[in-house]
Length: 336
Ligand code: SAM
Ligand code: DTB
Ligand code: SF4
Image 1 (cartoon, helix red, strand yellow):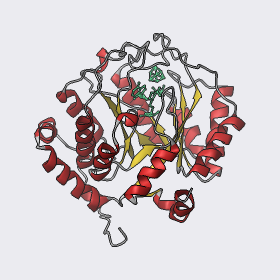
Image 2: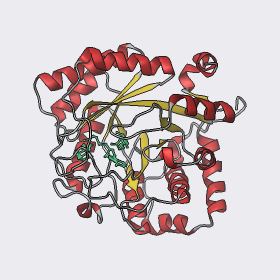
Image 3: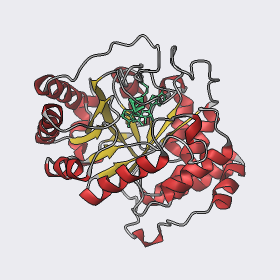
Image 4: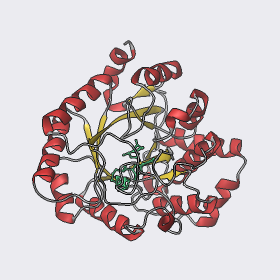
């Protein structure tokens, strides 16, 4: 890919995608759609993949009622809940993730919102510690105030993950303890503080194609686009309201990734939850038409993910570089 010309001109990025146009993409024959997405991907990005490691700093006991989530107090899922880990334990995990080859360390808290005090102070120390390991730091911990966003920015936080999950229209069917507007307001505070936005959604919640198009419209009408866009497939967890949901077909994941790539040419599109259910071939098609980031590590928050070894083997087979800013370390890690 060394001779690849990356398009530095961002003026062509669009922030006015309309629902009809997006629905037309959903109606396109898959092969044509993939061709279009691949072209856009090639013009705008190197063919590499960002490895992001995820660690649950505080698990369970969340006051929100997200119907897919095992960490909600409204679910009866049998998970290993634990209070917030201390700073040293989290940084030890970050170091392991770095040694395994991760570029970004994402930390999750099962909170409706961050409260000020010793837990928030510890979060700030974790962010500083991860940054001093020369890794990108991402936090996901629910709603936050402008002051908190500014403190996180001062600590060097790279990105804040705050998903919209689904369309504004379908949202109330999934969550009743907060509104879409609450979510948008937190996203605005993150942006104003100068922190990158990581914002995406879930497919497989029983939503329609219109809902998927509507979610992608909200994301692609943000200016600037979210720097990263996680696309999750529902992992139906026993004890949640969604435990009996039907698994999505991998083709729906490929289509969602391809359309996200067309609408947001330069964002990192992250293949997130549900990747364990995708065959190698389905993942390859996702990479081909635009996915350029994965969660890397044996666990997500309360569910499993492909192992480091499996992912290393897959990336090796594909000859795919990872962590573009850190190319010199690739060979060492690939050789393991
Ligand atoms: N509490 C914070 C929040 O909701 O923003 C942070 C953690 S929360 C678990 C992060 C995201 O993970 C959710 O917004 C949702 O998109 C995704 N997620 C949670 N459970 C999932 C599941 N069972 N399947 C797929 N995605 C899931
Ligand atoms: C995101 O979009 N997906 C990740 C991360 N951001 C925090 C979380 C996936 C959670 C999957 C279900 C679980 O492990 O509990
Ligand atoms: Fe809480 Fe986040 Fe789970 Fe919703 S998705 S219940 S906010 S941890």
